[in-house]
Length: 116
Length: 116
DNA sequence: CGAGAATGAAACGGTAGCGTAACGATCTTG
DNA sequence: CAAGATCGTTACGCTACCGTTTCATTCTCG
Image (tube, rainbow over all chains, first blue to last red; front, side, top):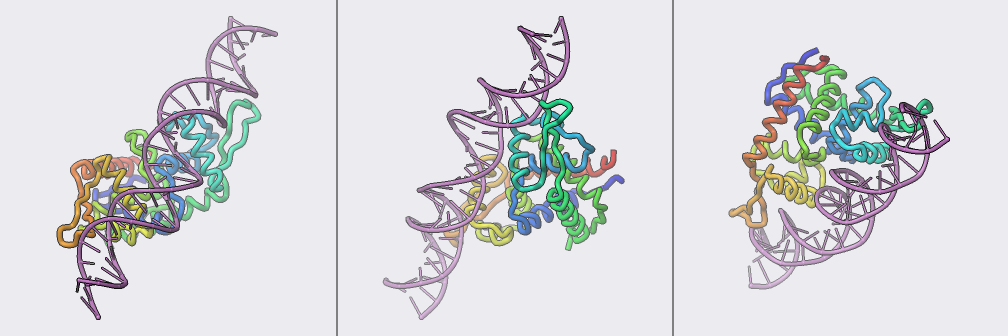
């Protein structure tokens, strides 16, 4: 599972993917938003505002705002927790899964083309 | 030079690096800014506002603003071109090189730890 | 020269992000 | 059942980014 990257590969990959994503997709997520989105989709649920804030070392309003924005983009959804109605449970969406699937494909494709 | 990544590795790496960078560094560059910064540091000079705009498929003010911001952060510098004084030549800085070096190290380190 | 093209920056109105602080709703606990 | 803790959101003032348009400067070329 481990990946051994050279410095040139590491930054080269990030470069190619960043440029590619900027050109192909109008949405300009911040690094924070991307981190939140990936956390939601790659780490087993449940996800809460407080939990995400703690995991990323940011304040709660940062999470709320990111969920507002990405919710409007259709990338995530949230509902009140019925067990403890203070909590909000963040849920994945088809749109978000599709977005990350395409993003992952871009990484794989550009990784393969590195140095060309 | 080519990198063959599985979907899990691709998104997992992006996830780990995004989260790690958010936690470790207060600066929250947008994907566009990151693409500009990496373009400046990984592609041979000279770089101009117009050239970067064309390369990334964005308008010129986007580049100007990004250079303003990243210039204030000490990540890039710019000077007028003496040959053609309409042009601005974007230059690398010690701060920017250091920033990307640390960022590259993060990618390498987290790539090695993938799946752990 | 003088007219037009080209370059990067600035102006403008609007949107979205920030950190801090305050808030209502809900749960917990003595 | 009241007092306090906890959760997510909202409010506030501010900064930064957006796209579009306009501008001053500089070069090119007839």
